[in-house]
Image 1 (cartoon, rainbow, N blue to C red):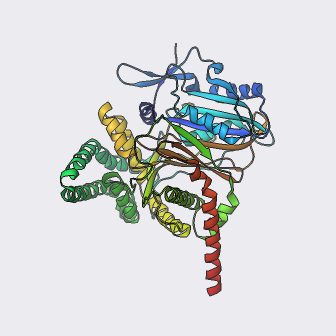
Image 2: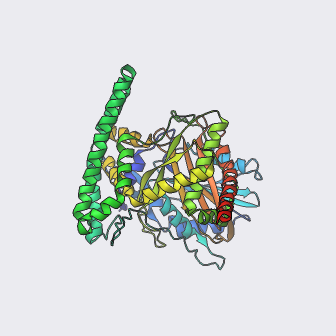
Image 3: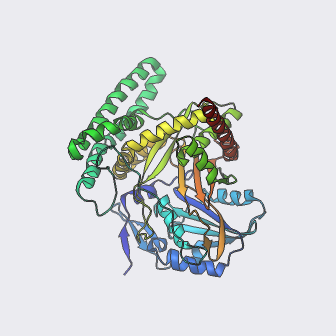
Length: 522
């Protein structure tokens, strides 16, 4: 009898979001220092990949009642998912980038398990492997965990993955409010999760009407701009106040001591969350605003030493992530300036892990993350000023409950009718210019089928009218920044990642100057 299991709520959501111009496919590439032994690689894939996780041998089946199931494919064969490829110029990274870009708009065959891999015989001094898998199979953190199962350490033993902590609200009280998902929730933690969910559900329930109201306001603004703007601000402020009050009431009921300390500690961030979801984000229309096409491109920059980034972060009381995000914002600002375009602020959706990375992966893999809005200043040429803004915003976000709220909204959207579902996805996705992922890879050299891995980079899918996906990947003491973009909306997109190192150099220089100035005054 054919083995079946139902798709999770989030898994179904990603499966339904495929569009020809923005596919819900995670693209990743890794390359080695020396040529790969493909027979050994085949054994690794059989034993640790498809052989270990049934989802890579299963098709997504849609039943007449609307339910989705993973059903094992009786005709599964690894050869149907692996293609040997040669580059037109193996010594040029742009040749590999063109290959990946060409496949960014290739739909996965729904009659087969939703993944395939391109094996490139020669790239630079070694080989390369490109893997494309549907987001319904697993989220980014799970894919990092999965990649770790393929790698060995220098001693030939399985590699140990990096530590990835759970991200959730961290109110200042004697008990931290965390929001895990799945089985095993107990006591106050489960109450917090359910309480936040009920508050978020009331907001999610208003998404379709909010989308219709937005369209109505857009039409009325043509006839009465001042009145429409005033009405939008008044109605939006009331909706934001109502949504926030609902979330806070639930929190007060379940957190220790009535939740008052927790509510007040996180209130500024939660108010900001309500503003983003109801009123909108700081995401100005600019050069890259428009409807995406099927013309795609990918690029990545030369790696930066992670130690240098850590040094700048420590000297400025920032995190490594603060520094990297600030440099991306600065690179976007310089890109816009070079194209005679202006944008005061742009917003990216950032995946937030709701479960810690675990070296023991569940057989079903799946998705367990939330998406939050990160607003980045793009009108400030001074990288030190940008760093200060990013630090402040990141710290405020860490105190709030945005991941828990947005995760519940994702669940609610998955249960809507098809029409409302599509409208809701667009409503939230189009408040951002794309997706930004920061993936912590292994910090010591790892080996794939006996060959040392030289580099790794990957891209999350984007939805709605989002034109680009940005990625920060750290591996073996280095950081690589990559971009996947719609080339019609983001011309010369590669200059965004090419300029990242220049912005970092500028930031490091100004940070040194600030430190020297402070020292001279002391």
